[in-house]
Amino acid sequence: MFQIGNFVFDQSECYLRDIPKDEDWEPAFHQIFWMQRNLPWWIGDFILHAEANLGEDYSQIFPLDVSEQQMNRFRWMSSLFTPEERVGSLSWTHHFAVAKLDKKIASALLTKAAVNQWDSQTLKEEVKKWT
Image (cartoon, rainbow, N blue to C red; front, top):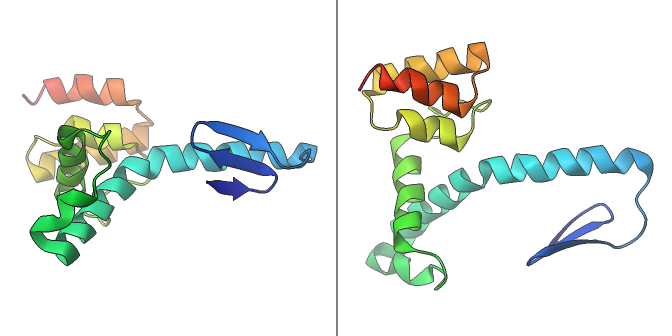
């Protein structure tokens, strides 16, 4: 559970601790979408830290209801794109679209996508030209 102002987020719900002021709604909305956008990176980075600190036993911390395939995908992406290589204005999905390309080409396409404000589908179409 976590809280943003009067908004409380629990396992599968958001409820109000008190009635928020009108000006509190928009920042809270932006914050939860920012969190959603960054969550795959956080999970992948967390897994890499767990692996580095717990060794081979790191996978025992995975929740039982999460697939190993999904955890491996998050881990792979975080290992492929270090925090310094990630383009903050683009989503994890943008990065996933270029993940199998050569690093230089991937970086150039991510930069082009950011400059031109491409959605991830437009970037995927551009990637097809390179595969």
